[in-house]
Length: 461
Image (cartoon, rainbow, N blue to C red):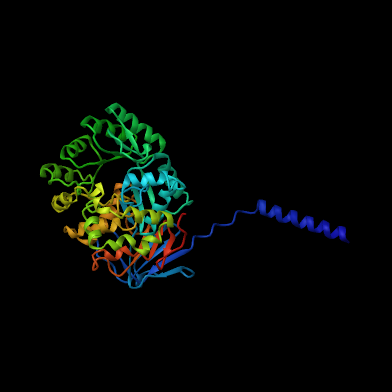
């Protein structure tokens, strides 16, 4: 009897195995739907906000967006009540530096990492910056200056879902005629000729960078060689520009994105040059706030350097080191020209606005006291202060920046696009963007990373 039972059990097991092997594969179940409903919708498009809206997400995509009265929520959907809040596209920073965190002095920061902070690798710091940016509502960013191996590695790990952070494009090192003193050697690709410039672009492309950052001291011929090599590899060139002759050289060479156009600390540019750049629709990124707003804001309220929310986004030892770095911040050489920069900021910014340039928005984040958490909102507010409408600035920071990144799948809330969405309290238009400092919900690629003001994934340590 026992032998018969054992034989029957074996036959049953074989039958089940055969059914598993030869039965048709089960139909894949559709991804669950998440519904954001009740709040105001700013789509990132050139249309007025929509009150009492619903946005439906399935998988990584937006499948519906419109009046709540017209969009039924499927049974079993996860519902996030956004009543009294605003839903808007995830923010995009067109000029970030993830290997810095806002330490009081840039060279001293890297010295701290080499000594007291040596347990933190460059990539670990970049992980921390990426986390801070994502928790602050930045779902995409262009990292314009870092070490190439770590930058490419972090981008891949974020894309693979191994670490939380914004969708990244990375440039790796600055292509320059002179290295930055005190920075990691790998963060500068020093060239001595246009030929070396082209060869450097080819080398960085093979290492996996997405864009090229042309930096200081380049000759006219350097710009032409760098742009030609980059475009042959089908990648863009972003140029760090202040002096008018450099701007002219970069324009003539075909540079794709003009960075720092509102923070040079000098007079306005030749109107005909500005008009020519604007006429090509090549974007300018002003970085107008990273000195001339940060400095007076910190003079007026030094307590911003001790903000408890900011503190919660740092490991204790890095936070303590940062506080020490702020002890004598007004004398930091980074702010040596602050009076001149503050004087010329407004005329420079208004010049680009008045001549209708295509405006991207970037921060130079990670520079002294310019934190990954608040720099983008300050930059947006600087543009509003100089006359751009709030909705236009939001579109510049989302839809236009998505265009700079050549990613039409992001930058707006509409069916078919990737679900990069943030929810903020109140109305950003009425509050002139100040409430963007407090992001309640962050969704990237349909994944909820923060909800009701609370991170759903821990900070890297």
